Length: 333
Image (tube, rainbow, N blue to C red; front, top):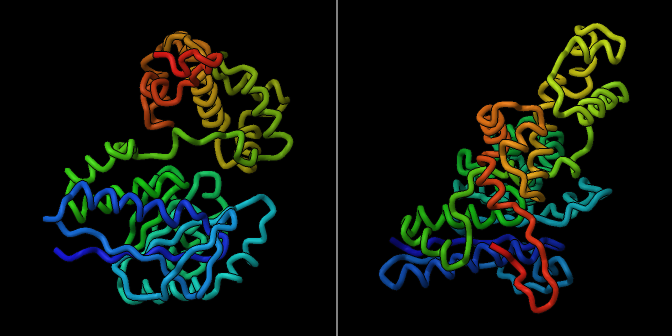
């Protein structure tokens, strides 16, 4: 098997870490695999002669060339960014992406790099993902794409998109597995201290960073539900509270939020349970009761469905550790 040719497309203000992250992991995989297995030929390419990445990092780039896999890093998607102007300034890169895909080779985006692929027309009628907090924006800009915000990595007809930042390693480990074998991928993950068993970005979603949907009426309903998480859900009583019929409540809430009050309540309960699992020593049964479920089994099933992890597993992964005074242990078992 010959070396896999991988090109990373550098462009102005792209994240430098996303330029070097995949090549560095492929270098590690080459060492793990040894000289008897085909490795990776990695180059940083650009249609420009000079590229300055995020943080003012000057990158040494090579001219565009034919590669087997073209990796497109993301950029800093700050609030208020004029995305149209940003993408307009990257016309040479978008043309290069389109040309590479037309030649039948693989294109991969990291995080916000999906917006460049969308601009190149590569996401139309394809499944895709990006950072969870930008999924709605990607879907708005590319309505013909089937955006899957829960997925870490999505591959559809030669086009791969990934979730935010560290998902570049999930992609790279899968690339290593396909090219060098599962044993090399697994060992590389161990050497780099990477989790090679992740399957979803859902556990990382922080609802506080998402825009709150709905109009004033639905937000009042949400506040009421948030303040009564442990109470039994009673649609008729909820409608009485807001002096409307149950039918009117369901219609108005769905029109402005796209979901029912019960669906919102379940999400709010999971959000509260996540916080308690992360920050307290309360038992799963106690947390279950606190968010309105007398049966811990029912709660655990709902929590797992929403986050992709069982409550105890979630706690192990996301528990907030106490930082001690200088000289004390920083992480307590």
